Amino acid sequence: MSLNFRYHILKSVKPYTIYIPQLNKSALRVLIQVSVHYIETKKSSADVLALAINKLKNAGHEVPKNFCELFTMVLLIMQIYLRYPKGVVKDQELRQCLTEDLCFTDACAEDLTKVLLNHRATLSRNFAETKMERAKMLDMQWRINISLGSTMAQLDKPTIVLHFKLNNGEYRTLELPLSMFQRLRYNVAVMLSELQSLQNRPVLKQF
Image 1 (cartoon, rainbow, N blue to C red):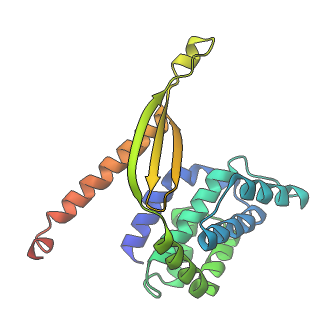
Image 2: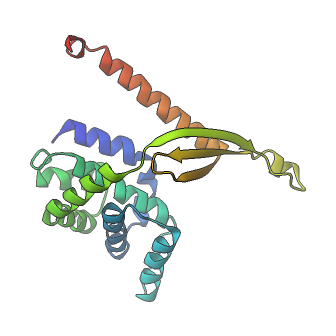
Image 3: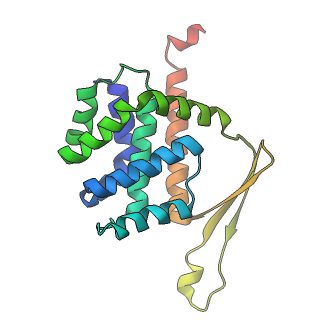
């Protein structure tokens, strides 16, 4: 198996593996549909997720408690797989990663593998196109938001608000609880450290 593929899957999906026991075949098929929709359109609004949840409910299937987290996990797996050239990750190796490393059931692993293999050409093309079209950040501002509630508990839970200006003229705002912001800060620091280590490798110093 491509060790890089397995490393990226485990590193990216690890925070969501605790929710995998909630995953069943019916929920996975809906999650795959939502993920494909996002890859093709770059859009994953709350309305899209709500429609997916209602689809499960109307069909009489159980909705996983952490549906949104499972959606993030499935989308990450698909995106990471599509980043690799065709043939680098073998079919059986993909199944093995899903069942042995991530503890997917055989049925769920088979469903996700079939979608990635049978529709790879279309998914790869759409993924590449949406990747090229994604807006880039021009500027960022931040502030600490403290709610003046009636209890001290509310004062002890500040949030971090990030304002992004994009090169397409749009503005985006992201509000994070302090714990999630600390996780984001840590992950960025790890990424910068890994880039620094990569730059220090002798083979790269030749360029």
